[in-house]
Length: 265
Image (cartoon, rainbow, N blue to C red; front, top):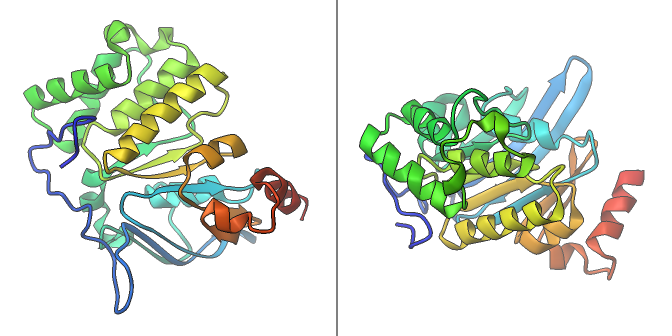
């Protein structure tokens, strides 16, 4: 059960936060990716990707453009099929159990896919139907999320009238309508001005403190240093660094310097 930041409302909610993938001598994980590969014709987008995400982590994914970040995230939320390898989310095999996984998964794609002709509130309540949430509970949860993201004044405004920063907040709010244990965000602050970026950082940190696991990509090093507890760095479809930022920067280089060195290779 989350604390006062967000209250669980899903009528069929089962707290699976600590029911994760484990093996003999292994820790529990909410996400386990093993030997993942993705080919597009003769192009290798992902090459033998293996990593784990612990429950409650704020896990980061960074890398130069074309490194494979978006491909990896699209595989995790079942938009792209991997060529080989395995993914388990909360002890469920993504290949066979996505219908079960989706009920505890929130997704924030890089490009907004909100309905332009609907109001902010309608975008949340209609999206909740995808999860079979009762209308009354949906209305309660939607209003709670709009309050959390300081969107009450815009709840009846059409999405088409919103600024980029407000749209991102609506997209993140919508991703929480099903009370997920895990949310996956693909560069959620790209193109936003510093004030909107800071607002989203604050909200994501509150969500993470409440117990929600966050897996997020970014190309802002300041963002990575401020938010991520653990991270991987991708380049040319391979993981070149994996661990805590403090471990990755042990050679006294800043994260930005390491990133720039990797981008040159």
